[in-house]
Image (cartoon, rainbow, N blue to C red; front, side, top):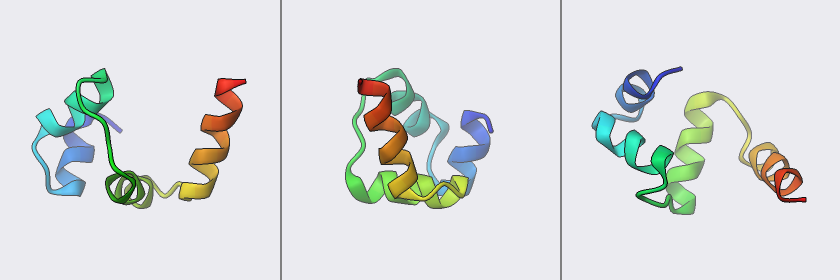
Length: 55
């Protein structure tokens, strides 16, 4: 899914997605949860993958 499609599903501007993708903006937990729901990825699975990537 590209930035524009995700932004449309989240009802946010494309720049919103671009800024957190580039690291210019950080997401809070509520926003991350909404993104995970949109992408059909359980938040717990996302966190698990993130933790593994840090090792």
